[in-house]
Amino acid sequence: MLRAFLSQTPINPGAPFPDRQPSDSWEEVRVLVISSPDGVRETVHELHRRGFAQVGAWSKLLPGPNAGEVMSILTRRRARDRSSLS
Image (cartoon, rainbow, N blue to C red; front, side, top):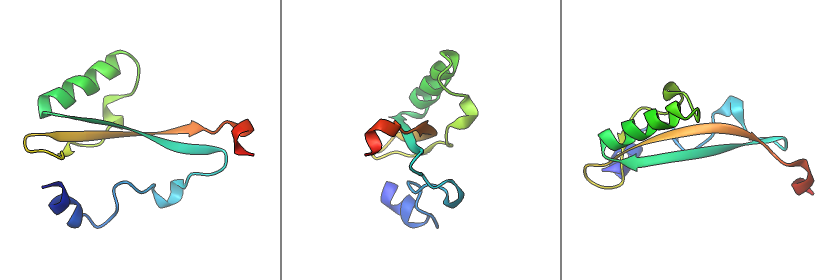
């Protein structure tokens, strides 16, 4: 099911947006929640209540890897530690 969805998607959903390419100063971090639709929604709302991320920052519900599952992805930018770049 997931492969069928991705094969119909014109872009690679795991790729960074062209105008947001990671650089030496920052990188993208992705958080993925996989569960039943109710489980994903509840987790996203709980993370919002805890101040982790706005509900609207998560992707829409996408087909999950197993029957009955869906997933939602949150992408954030993170500053790279300059001392670890050498």
